[in-house]
Length: 214
Image (cartoon, rainbow, N blue to C red; front, side, top):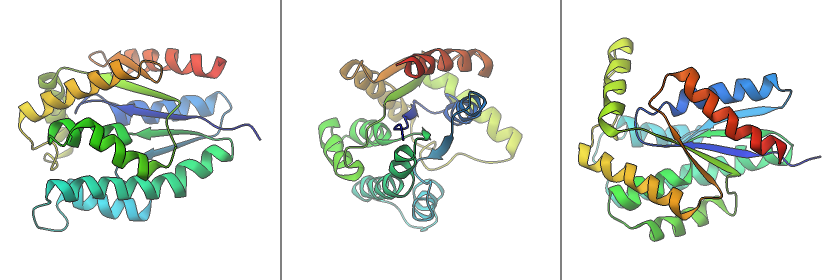
């Protein structure tokens, strides 16, 4: 059976990663491919429990930065072994809304632990399962937060724990992503996420078609 592919979406807040990941899964299915959507943190029962702690304060106590790093890694390790790796081995295309790069920049740059330290922790968690393609949906931080505010107003929700971080934190995160893309140009594609969903979807599909032809 041919090996499947692994595509991840990354980027600062408000860039439309979830929307585009789900649109890509639908488009792959229309192309006759088996496609699996997943997300980080989460994607498994264990991962979703961790997501509740990391994003929605379910533990009802402050989460230390070191704890945060290890919880993300634990969720990722479970997701790789229960969902991502088995699906790829069965020939499916896996599309993930965030993956290891998020920890590299949010905790490595945003929290100040350093990118290299986070890359080492990620390597242990993912065990060699690396995306074939990472689509970085890049967007100005202020524009992203305007989008978040509009969405939260529509849905009657508030910001999660990460979204409550200071703007300077999120500016560091964005720059961290761009630095990662410069380090790994063969895997990353930086896409302008300032357009509407249809425009961004077209950019995404153009990159995925190159993988399909490869």
